[in-house]
Length: 332
Image: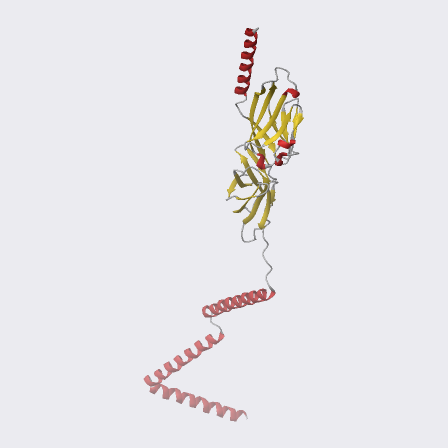
């Protein structure tokens, strides 16, 4: 009989040691902000022990008790005030649920199960789990600071996302056209709430956009190497050609006057050149006068050289004149 009891005791000891070793590895559990997280215990209960025979409790990394079940009865008096009313125990899965999870609840937790025996409480199971609390950032939002002007193709915008945890790795802007894609980084501004510990992040960027093509802009928030949240697309249509401003009336009048003056000047110069090449009547008269003057000078030279002949000619002229006069008298 003693041999049988010792064998049973050794087997139970080995089972407890195996359970303790199996519980040494900490499980990771994820929960979202303001939702419910699970703290598993994974008790195999190979002996089919009832809750009346057990003492079960969970505590956090600061040794604060979250929940205690003593012989099937909850013991709220032993629970830390910050956990009161926030827990529920699932007997089927041996899991404690922590409700309304906050960022501050991130950390390590342990569950303990003791078997109540005649000689006192005996630890038969222990398990650790790490609770990781997350908060989903809002979808990034693009806001235009100042639109590009007609003289500049530079665009200024901000991108922001709020109420998230943990801190994101990167935030950037992606510019896409039909034939190209560009990425613009900036220093990520961040602020963290002292109450919720949630982050708000934003960036401000300035970059040129091609005016001749349609552009699509995205803002990207990178939480992990493979997890990225994109904003709604921000579309910018290609610029229409800027029409030339109308010319004021007074400028048109000035331009017309200048054209008239220039054309008149050109016509005047053309006519003047033509007159120089083709002499007119006044020029012909001047030439005739010069020729007559030259003839007179020639005649004078002739008279000086032949004076006797001139007397004879004069005499002949007088005789001819007398005969003519006599004939006229006879006829009368």
